[in-house]
Image (tube, rainbow, N blue to C red; front, top):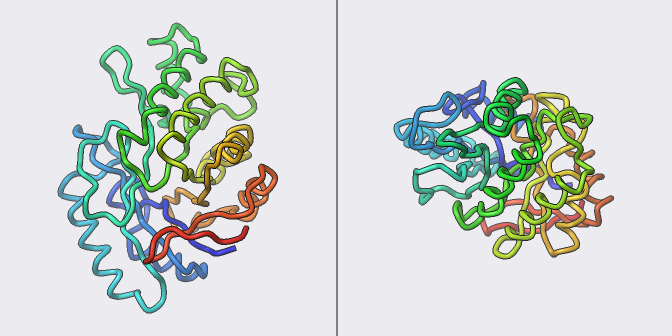
Amino acid sequence: MTLSNFHAHTTYCDGSESCEEMVRAAIQKGLVAFGLSGHAYMGFETDWCMSPDKTAAFVDEMTRLKETYGDRITLFTGVEQDYYATEPTAGFDYVIGSCHYIKKDGEYLLVDESDAVQQDDVKRHYSGDFYAYVRDFYTTAADIARKTNPDFIGHFDLVTKFNEGGRFFDEADKRYQNVAIEALVAVLETHRLFEINTGAMYRVGKKAPYPAAFLLKELKARGGEIILSSDSHDGASICYRFSEAAELAKACGFQYAKTLTTSGFVDYQL
């Protein structure tokens, strides 16, 4: 396996360590390539995204780190562009397209803030109907490639973050799986590369990465491709449980994953 990771955050957004601390951790873990990907500005203030000023400072800092550590690791400057983000992505080495919000009744509902917030949003806006809630999430996610023009798709089924063990809805239920697959198929019309993301395994104890196995099987059957990511917010979680993610990918039919090089994305064998 080629050890690399391109979904990671720092104190410029909602990470807990600086860019340099994250780079040093990646080098210590033996990565050959590493990318930091700040959360793009949403057009309104949040406590988890970069501001326009922080975005410029982040890019400058990454330029400095590329010069400082370039003989030890290949570094890339990325941005995680939410569906509703407003800042342009020109000038970044790569873009992660993701969906964190449902827009409902004039409100932006953040699907991954906490289980309590999610329950309250579903109660207030959907009369407690989680299947209606996830349907709206995937209606947005289905359009993510067109809206963000990404290099790869991030945590496609993020809406399941707090649903371990079917706590809020049954992920085997066709009411859930059908809308998720429909959204996946819609994205695949124009974009093929999706991440397998272990971040919630580290942060909230999720037993499996995003996307779920049934989505990975659909992705493989329809010509999709994968890239492993840890969505790290600290150095300790970089490449967290990648061996398990690779085994899941192989069980779903994948033999190869992508990594990013200075010549673009290339395959390596799992």
